[in-house]
Length: 577
Image 1 (cartoon, rainbow, N blue to C red):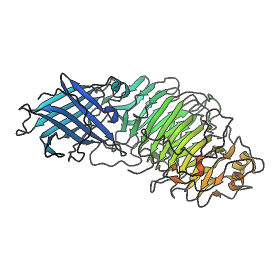
Image 2 (image 1 turned 180 degrees about the horizontal axis):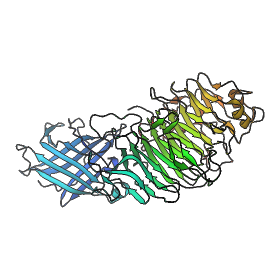
Image 3 (image 1 turned 60 degrees about the horizontal axis):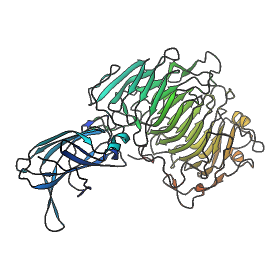
Image 4 (image 1 turned 90 degrees about the vertical axis):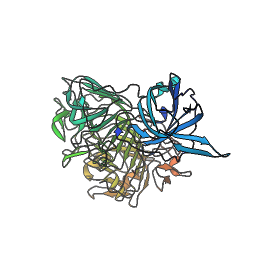
């Protein structure tokens, strides 16, 4: 079978009745970055990959060739690949011109299609005896475009597990991690990495380690709810995905095990612990301990401590509840300092909070919490970082609670440092589910700027533990804006405000203080989570000129009405399967 022409062909005849056989799900994720001409030694094939919103991809492959009689013809294959699927059985289809304007399609065999890396694809065609074509094996085909391999992150083929891991066995191209790693390890994206129980990087400050995770890497649990990744104080994580190749930590039932369905709580999540201040252990020896594991210490006196870098990182179906108020969340940040670079995180259908901060000063830009099982954003123990650009979408029946549950210290409401984070350009969508949009309690402060709170059944804003929370915030006539402030906030709930009745004034009085500007109670006019033309959210922003972390925006909420920054790196950010 002579394949001597590398020509591009558009996806003809999309409804070709392609077959799907997808049990090879691991490691590599297809995307449109695999669109290319592949060839070697005079043989070649053209691929077109079309991503779908649900994470699947439609593969179209075509080549121009000759049959055994020397007659030229087009042959193509079309198949659907699951999110982590790299191999499938397809069917080659011959295209034959008939009457003017008509094309005849004929299945002429079966084909094994395998993507090994950005630089290597494999097609093995087993032709029917009466097809007029000989069998052909097209292996080790390389991309014709030089720039292609630079853009695609899957550079290497899987060759086996490194010394620090063991073969998982249940799925191909998978390696197991377990125990404590005090060295520097790298999780490559040619492998599906399996967390077996608690996987800890480092033994506190005295014996640190580091973990580097390549973009496009997938990590799953071994099937226990106690599978999670823990970064110890003094150790570091370098997990930088890309907009087209995020890092994903997810359930083993998320397409890896046939006949299973992923659910919240299928695994733990990502826990990062650092040496930044917490009001639960403000002095040496800084013995704060994880609520879910009293042997795991965190905290210190360095607000600029660095635990590394995390970006374009999804955690799906996570959350462990060891006991009441003792949980691992999708993302858990314990005493993490502002030297840690964190942006573009998504928590999808977790059993507990999307992200919880226990003290620390870490800043986060671009956060998506989709259909979580408790609070979307939770802070405690004196957290005082900055958060800008966030989308929170409550689902129905996942145990949703608050959009923000802000606490300072449940045992000492006036402990120092008080929790006073600043939140800007968030869109909180209750969709009639959960509790209140934003709750301050236990003496917590919080500064809310240019944010939308919409559709929460209890209220948009709630303050509890009135005397302590109010004393720190000041009064409506003389607010302490370093502790609590509302600027450019849009509220749209049936009941805008709620209090526990123990304060000298109400949160509504405070919100409507003459000291604040740009606050409204109005329908933000959203189409999903994007503001529609004419929405009041497209203007009216108030600038926080005293904080260099925040970008200047003219709009309120997470989106400007044109640019959807969730596209590409998130999984169904607006909810749904």
